[in-house]
Picture 1 (cartoon, rainbow, N blue to C red):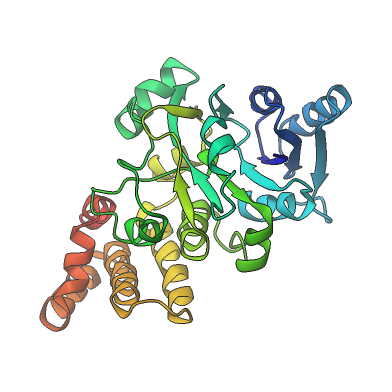
Picture 2 (picture 1 turned 90 degrees about the vertical axis):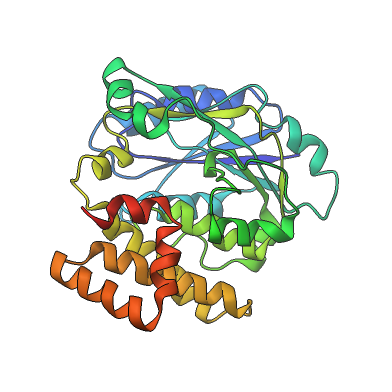
Length: 313
């Protein structure tokens, strides 16, 4: 196996060294690709030092040296990769020693196009733990049981509590089918939830198999400057970001050959979050409208914990 680990780097000078070294512990990691995204801190200098220190580390920036976000940065890393497999890692997260244990065996089967595992949580400070423990706790981000690859797409779309989630940090894919079957890869117009949108589409195009689900293969680093903290602190309205996510999925699904019930569910989830994001009077007007003409739009939203959370905000 030759694995290319793609790491987008933004405002992560404190953490990126740990991320890189956690990837370099594996012989299978052929290269670590850093894509520096015009960080306001000294992350670029730290990345340059890592390149000088480690022969397997490569550093890239966007052609205009500008800030483009995690999605476009991952796209650039994928384009520059030369390994047979691609894994992802955020610059403030890190791999555990068992990260590729399942992949070593599963990828012996050429039909396996991707493998996903479970992600744990590491709080970098007591302040971060105090603030974000209600969100992440000590729970694994994982799929609750092993599913057939053909069921993964539906499981992620419906997410009624029985399937679970997997993280981009715990995913490894074959490069060839990714490049051949999926374009665009990460959506460039989504600044948040672009990884969720990518994973849903990926599971439609590629056969993804479960790896280690009952223990962490990597750790999500939680600190005061995570992207998720901006959402939670209301600097970004949560429902509005999910409207964009489901709008993108709705546009995509309309042009794909998939069951009508799945397309309809995606459209209803889009409508649900439009309702949750609307001003109060408009919100209740839409609830009344869909309650009379298409109550399943409301029901689809009520199945989703995030919709229920933001409905009355």
